[in-house]
Image (spheres, rainbow, N blue to C red):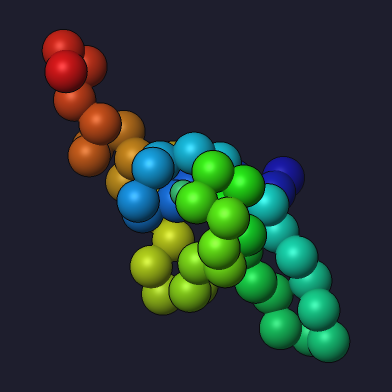
Length: 53
Ligand SMILES: [Zn+2]
């Protein structure tokens, strides 16, 4: 099962771009590549996103 990763800026799902062995994540909303150190997991997004905001 593949884990989904999310943008730390807009919290949208990221697109995985596998290039030359180095996986990169691209955000279609921000139109930029997100560093793998900054990407959020689904759990982290749930923590950040408050239900009543
Ligand atoms: Zn984004």
